[in-house]
Amino acid sequence: MKNKTFIQSVKCAISGLIYALRTEKNYKYYFAIYLITLGINIIFKISSIGYIVQLIMTTGVFGCECLNTSIEHLMNIVDESIRPEIKIVKDVAAGSVLCWGIGYFTSWIIFLVGVV
Image 1 (cartoon, rainbow, N blue to C red):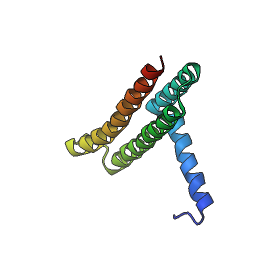
Image 2 (cartoon, helix red, strand yellow):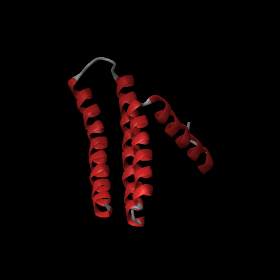
Image 3 (cartoon, rainbow, N blue to C red):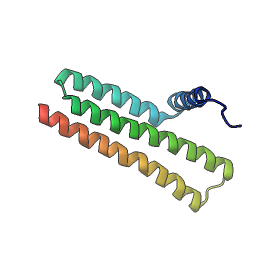
Image 4 (tube, rainbow, N blue to C red):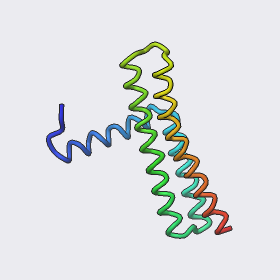
């Protein structure tokens, strides 16, 4: 069923984010890492650009983790058996999260080293 209004779409999206945070172990880890690094940024007084980069990278990680979760659920609906083709789809989706995670930590370390 298609959403009728923008508000309904936003409510559905928020529901998806809440689902991911409640059910996905990695999403919880990324959220905890974000809070820890945000605290470190505050302590070391990272520049405004550092916060902007962190926000962009965090959004990318969370977005890819949501896509990865949705792809995994969809693939489980399509076929519960272990098939090489489905493993590839799931692995590539997980790889996108890893790419953003590496970018997150790399950019964060660059800003932290520049401040310390």
